[in-house]
Image (cartoon, rainbow, N blue to C red; front, top):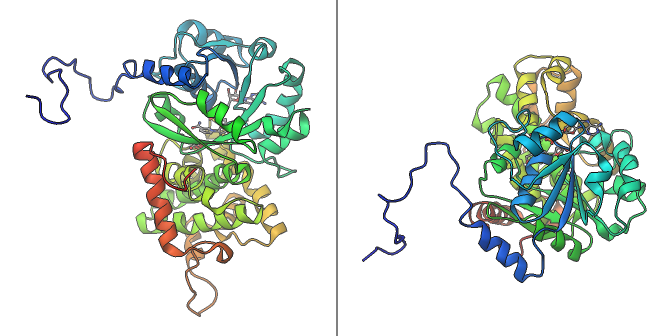
Length: 411
Ligand SMILES: NC(=O)c1ccc[n+]([C@@H]2O[C@H](COP(=O)([O-])OP(=O)(O)OC[C@H]3O[C@@H](n4cnc5c(N)ncnc54)[C@H](O)[C@@H]3O)[C@@H](O)[C@H]2O)c1
Ligand SMILES: O=P(O)(O)OC[C@H](O)CO
């Protein structure tokens, strides 16, 4: 008699996995596809992913493994060929086998022809110029989805705002995806959650259905401001964490910065109209934890190099991939000033980048100039639910990450 929870297949007959090999998902994949078909989503919905860097390629894999017919746009013809013929993107995702059905092309018109949903993953500072190139080839009712986590220098605009400004598109057809989504972990099919946000719940749901498979689960919300700013702001806190890591400070300093950083993120986003709950979810706290903890994070890595004493010019030279946080510091502080939001951690990151603050001096934000003891304000007083609510948010986020379970009142 098998014990409760044991499978009928004996462990001895099960094929053995070598250490480090991700569990096979092929057995579970058909169930996800069948569930999607029951929801009326035909397998093979045509989608385009623009940008064949680490996140664009990983997202193309997510969608392809979820049953969509994906064409990935790569600027370099040789990369498009490597992806289509070799099923590899060795520069950005070493060791990852890409799905058989995934095609790549260097031609934007071919990537966009017939695409019902278009996922964009280029560096934020290049979005505007890429939208100009895309516009002639977009299908009239296509949904546009930003996978990016930056704001534009100069305008301070979020990616969905730039899409809305540049294209003759129904704003309800724009979405953004964010969450604790380190590309390489997901490309290795490690279970992960994200949130799809659109002012139209219907659009968010249509995108989430395609962006769900056996290892990737998409939740939905309608708070685009909170979702996009969560992804931008956690990068800045991750740079701060990298800096103190590089200096050699330990866990207390990092936990203090993460906790105070979440308050800064929430204050800022709420001042721009976000819902505070969003910052306590996958796109805020969830992403903050992942990015601040992982050596895979480029923002964290850039910070660590700064903390080790490299100049900003050296760091930029060393970073081979998009490091959005470095470009976002200035615009975010401008936006914060415009709303009177205090962001001491982000301000200190700016000073370290400018060379006016030594990395080892980044901690004094934990004290103040005043000798008076201050109350610990965890979230904006106007929204205050106290520390119990914050702890509840932490538990909800961890729960979502561990079990993919929807929590009451969650996303
Ligand atoms: N990598 C991740 O884990 C991850 C996860 C979630 C979100 N993101 C976000 O996705 C976006 C893209 O990041 P990434 O990790 O894929 O970066 P990346 O550096 O790995 O890839 C960027 C891609 O854009 C291309 N590119 C560069 N300049 C371009 C231009 N002017 N026009 C068109 N294409 C250009 C590059 O050739 C490359 O293919 C960023 O906003 C990032 O914050 C990344
Ligand atoms: O590598 P980073 O620092 O750009 O972070 C990647 C993702 O945004 C993590 O969610």
